[in-house]
Image 1: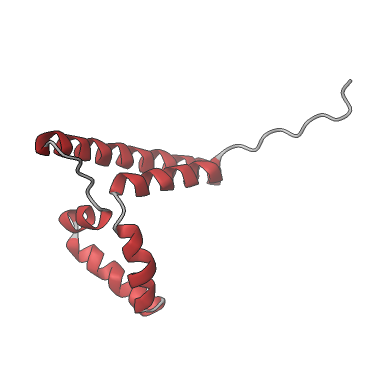
Image 2: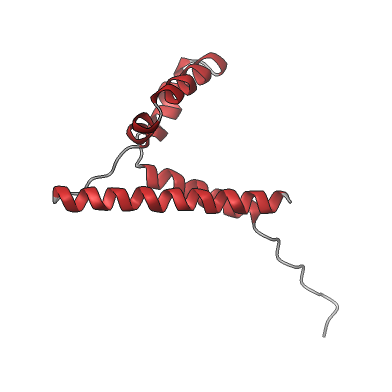
Length: 106
């Protein structure tokens, strides 16, 4: 059941990554230049109040330096890169283990 959940999360993250990559590709074609939207800009355009709440939650639980050093650097990356990395991580966690080799077989 847990493996299924991680595989489902992997598929959702990969879907979001592809959608964000297509949006960036369309913007790049329209601008005739490479456009990669940071995750923070995408998040702020969709739901600015949750971005502010996340910042407050991280600042209160881990300290303001955690937001400035770690989370701000992750949010500065293109959104499709972040979600593709999450998809790979969830896929690696949810993959089925390989069967053990049968050492007694001839």
